[in-house]
Length: 90
Image 1 (cartoon, helix red, strand yellow):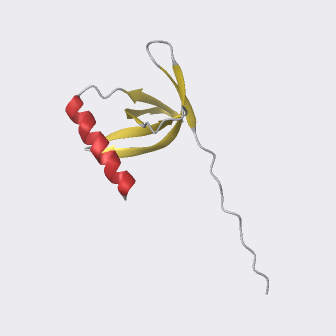
Image 2 (cartoon, rainbow, N blue to C red; image 1 turned 30 degrees about the horizontal axis):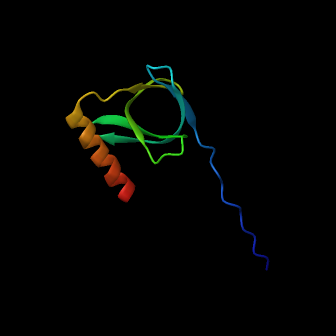
């Protein structure tokens, strides 16, 4: 009897490039989309050798198209970050 094992499937990571108001561009890996309080948010890992995670509002606008929405309310942002941290601990 032979023991055939399949190699694990490695998914290609999705990347997007953020352009900030000052013209600086940062390539980010899409970590994932999550729900909190009836809204969707996205977590991005910048490819800049830091441990930072960027969190934005997430809005689908069509097939394979989405829009990042700044979270301008500090209270909302703190709650979303707490939810993200909770998800990461699980």
